[in-house]
Amino acid sequence: MSQGDRPSNEPRQALAGLRVVEFSAAMAGPWIGRFLAWCGAEVIRVESRKRPDVVRLYVPPWDRELGIQPRLSPWFTDWNAGKRFVTLDLRQPLAVELAKRLVARSDIAIENYSAGVMDKLGLGYEELQQGNGELVMLSSSGFGDTGPCRRYVTWGPNIEALSGMSRLSGFPSRECTLTQYAYPDAISALHGLVAVLAALDHRRRGGGGQYINLSQYEATVAGFGHVMMEYLALGQEPERMGNRSRSAAPHGCYPCRGEDRWCAISVATDSEWEHLCRVLGKPEWQSEPRFASLAARMEHAQALDDVIAARTRVRKDYELMTALQEAGVAAGVVQNVEDLARHDAHLAARDFFEQIEHMAKGVVTATGIPLGLRGTPGHSGRAGAGVGEDNDFVFGSLLGMTPDEVERAVAAGAIEPADEP
Image (cartoon, rainbow, N blue to C red; front, top):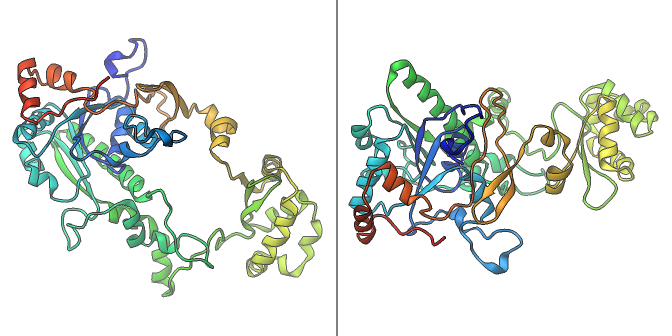
């Protein structure tokens, strides 16, 4: 639902009136547009059938036998809700010209192609600024546009390894591991979002447009400041600790009754240790020398984990969590997706899950955005749009092209045909 489609009695959204053009793929770029669209900006995403976005190609869950369905990929639905979609083959000069006209009528351009691609296409910042002197443009690439690695193509897992995230992930007895989620994408997207909002504020104060070049590698490395300080201070490489902590013991996930049910527990003080012992029915643990202090508990962490697991294994997860929390001990159930969607009272109270219009599935339940704008509440717009779904609106109504002009652009291959309804 666009801002213009929303009921007139609803509060105006925070970014209403802003128009964004996205030249993006995967998550690092689209996730920025997702936040902006949730806050009311009109976000237009440029796609091409020649180079389809990888997240459109993910097979939707439970329907693997149906094959790839570009409107139903769950990650595409999530990361691109509330946007408009147009198709341009940017290798065609006319398509580049149309992209420039679109950016000239917009406030923000976001791209996360490999460094230098936009310049090669004739869509670099200097080119685009000639048509829009107030343009705010963000380029988000693996290494930024300078430095010896600038030409390398990256994905989130590459950056996880290079940044040290993989080196620190996992249990000490095992090899290092990837997170399987590509966290650098989300990290760099949030850095990019803040940079775009800061640039908009700068422009609002009369500073004009500007170009932001973001290195996803640097954004990820910046998240490891504490372990870098450890190395600089002690001169030793930080260890891979698994679920252990340098400031708490016990600290980990402990089995509960049932199949694959767990409760995370963290004890940092002797007082918390006393309460944990009482809740688990083992007050005598307090007098054991190997558990008598935090230092002793950390020294005997494995033995500590074993005795606690033997007691938690017979408890129900939520019952144990509640008892520990009421006793002042940090504890939380290790929730699965069903728990999040159906049992998490906190997410429900904050209306985190939204009912949104999916253009292929009807009304669906979807994850929202972790923001709470009380004065200008946001909303996830429509999802599941087809490739080129908004060609008619954007090229006809927004750019003012006549049907004959659009037809000629399609015949020339600049505008690619939209999906059949």
